[in-house]
Image (cartoon, rainbow, N blue to C red; front, top):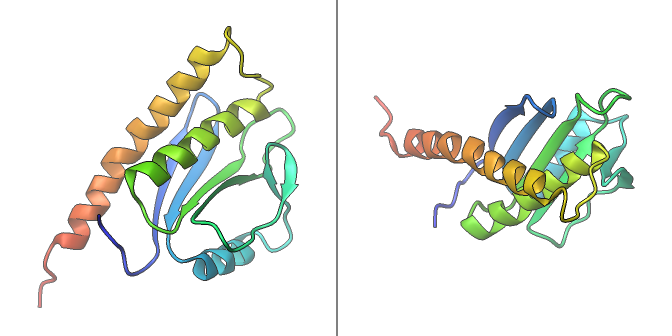
Amino acid sequence: MLKWLAMSEIELYEPLYRVSISIIECGYEEFARLIAERHANETLYSWNEAFMLESGTDGYQFHVCGDEQGGGEKFYVWVAEVDDYNIAHELHHLAHDILFTRGIVYCSQSEEAFAYLTGRLHEMFRPEYQKQREQKREPKAE
C-alpha cells in the first residue's frame, strides 16, 4: 500500500453533471485546515444537509453549493490513505450525492445511472492517481 507523506490532491471535472471534484489524501487536521481556508464562509453539504467535519474517521465526501439549478458544486472526497476500499467506498457515496442533488432517487429504474456514474468516477480517478504515484517515485534531479 502506498503511503504519501504530504497532501495529494487530484482534481476532476464530470461534464454530464457539471461538477468539479477534488480527491484529497492527507491527515485529518491538514484537510480540515485546507477546507477552512478555501470555504471559510460557506456551508458544507452532504445529501443537501448541512455538514460539519469531525475527526474520528478515515474518509469523507461532501460538497459546497453551486448554482440553484443543480450544477457547479465543488465536491470533495477526502481519505486519510488511498487504498482500493477507501476510494471505492467514498466514490460510491460521491456518485449517490451527485445524483441526489440532481433529484435522482435510487430505485430499480435509476440504478443504472448510479452504476454508470460510480464506474465513470473510478475511470476518471485511476489514471490521475497512477500519474501522481509515478511522479512520486521518480528520482529527483540534483
